[in-house]
Image (cartoon, rainbow, N blue to C red):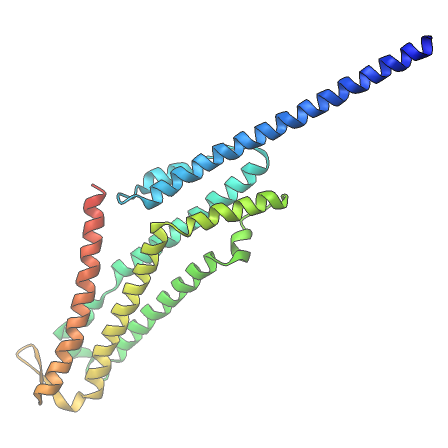
Length: 253
C-alpha cells in the first residue's frame, strides 16, 4: 500500500515537472513572438523613414545606433542595422559623387582652349570619374548579393532567424531610397557619357572648328547643330537632376 502511494507521489511529481516544462515552453514562445513583433515594428518605422518624401537622416541614424531586442533577435537586429548603416554611407557617397562632378568647368571655353584639341587632361579626369562611378556601381550591386548580405550575421543562428533576416533585408531593397540611389547612378552615368561625347566630337572634328570671341565656331552649319545638340543633352540632363534635388530639399523643409 505504501509503495502504491509512493509511486502515486512520483507520478504527481513528474506531472508537475512536465506542466512546468510546458509552461516554460509556452512562455518562451510567447516571449519570442512578442520580440519578433517588437522588431517588426522597428523595421516598419525604419522603412517609413526611408520611404518618406522628407527623408530624415538624423532620425534614421538614431534608430540605427540603438538596439531594442535580445537573444537571437538581437543578432538579427544588429546585422540588419549594420547593413543599413553601410547602405546609408554608400547612399551618401553616391550623392556626394554626383555633387562633386566638375562637368561645368570642363565645358568652359577656357578649358577647351587650354586642353584642346586632343583634350588629354579632360579625358583623364572623365576616365577617373567613370572609374569611381563603376566602383560605386560594383559596391551597390554587392550590397544585394546574398553572400554579402549574410556576412553581416556574425554569429551562427537557426535557419528560422536567417530567413527572417533575409525577409527584412528584402523589404529594404524595395524602398524608394533604393530607387533614388539607382537614379543618381543612372544620372551620373548619362552625364559622363554625354560629356565624353562632347570631347570625342571636338577631337574627331578638330580640323573643322576654332575658338573666336570665346565661342566655338565650326566651318559648317551641320557640325554646329550636331555640337549644339550634344551640349543641349548635357544641359537638359543636369537641369532635370538639379530640379529633382531642389524638390527633395524643399520637401525636407
